[in-house]
Length: 60
Image 1 (spheres, rainbow, N blue to C red):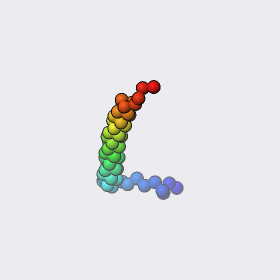
Image 2 (cartoon, rainbow, N blue to C red):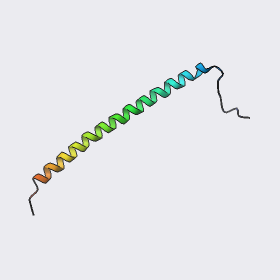
Image 3 (cartoon, one colour):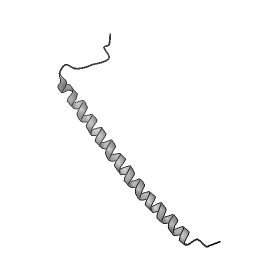
Image 4 (spheres, rainbow, N blue to C red):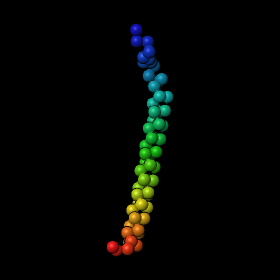
């Protein structure tokens, strides 16, 4: 009746799945770290740019 679910009797068949899942999770964490790092650099550049523009802005 529930043939679409497969739970192996030999638990060593889970090892490849766990390894591939671990690799994908590690890559996801690394990607997130890189995105955050690049985003912080862009934020600093943007703040520096607008800070410099306000210093050179004539007073009205």
